[in-house]
Image (cartoon, rainbow, N blue to C red):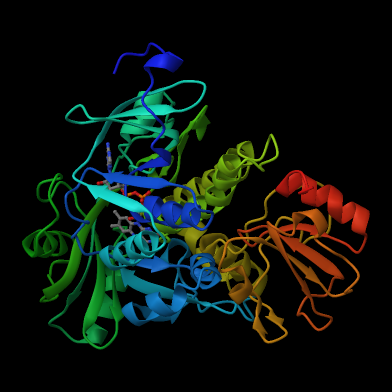
Length: 488
Ligand SMILES: Cc1cc2nc3c(=O)[nH]c(=O)nc-3n(C[C@H](O)[C@H](O)[C@H](O)COP(=O)(O)OP(=O)(O)OC[C@H]3O[C@@H](n4cnc5c(N)ncnc54)[C@H](O)[C@@H]3O)c2cc1C
């Protein structure tokens, strides 16, 4: 599409508020969040069918909390398997730290196509339109909207466009946003399959081979199924999913035996490219999920990070469209989420180093393995991987400011049940405060027995603590900061 601006008279009507390129987990979650605020959303995906490649991903604590906040968790849980919330950092086998501060202190292993389907259904039920077999091929933005061109030439128009179109994002490339970082240097095969030799034999061989080859592990999941990770070293066609024969060949080459692997549940390959978009927003076009950041899947954070981007962006973009957003609200999306992604990229870099078979990294790994016996170290790393440790910078204030509030008990139930509609919440133990002119955007719960040890908390729709205190005037300053002008 050429880059001249379309003049007002020649513009097609704005048929949608937001067009989302890509109906992966990030795009579907964003669509659902926008629909909570009656935003007219169209999701376009170039694939005619949802992804069918089966790989099991892990939903970490913060993502499970988000699902609970929108009433989705009961739908998701039956499709997954709960596992302990520890042992993810660099695959160092440790139990979870003591007393994790979440009502959802586990990992949910779930096939990626299943979570994608559930999120897409959730978005569609809330009224998002999803059109498949439609690839975004170009766009042009002007002062009131974005004209989006599909492969095939059709043009659509919306007020905003969000690129949730994955690692090779067309939207990011067309925006000209730089994607600095490191290219992929190594390829790894990863899958779940059954084995044909006894457990003890596998454990002994893995311990021996793990001294010289990494990433390499066979870890039991249940009775007979093992998670298998082995360097690809050029095995198979990079453009295709690996075959069982690729796994057998690599296991024999590295361990001298293929452990009799058979009956694979799923098989995948991944590289270690690590990149972060320089900007998440250019005018009316934004990026989220893998379109904005890529990193190796060690620790299982990518999908979680994308879904959490969507959760951060949804209510802000909706506020912008509904007309009540304070002037800088939309820019807080990049200000808050870019550092979180940078931190995830860094922790995956560190984890990949810890998988190296070289003597130096092996020594560091031994040392870290010892350090993780200190509960505080284990907790720090677990909170990082699971994203419950994220704290946005809202300025000076108590430790809780900028963090997410756990699903504490409130009268008649739990806090997250009050957040299903994506509104703000004033959780008020004093019973003296009021959301006043913001009552159309912010709910108020007066509850002296609420499970927080501060007088009053203002929660944003994404569950992060925007204010703590007991003074009405101070509260109103913060209501203005996050929720705009009061209704008259
Ligand atoms: C082996 C492996 C294991 C992993 N394990 C985990 C894990 O345990 N936990 C975890 O959190 N993450 C994991 N990940 C990462 C996770 O799969 C990704 O981070 C996640 O899929 C990103 O979601 P997304 O919606 O941002 O992008 P995608 O899932 O890539 O979705 C992008 C969508 O955009 C569509 N699209 C592309 N171009 C266009 C276009 N021009 N127009 C319209 N549509 C377009 C695509 O068809 C696709 O549907 C793993 C990845 C790998 C490779």
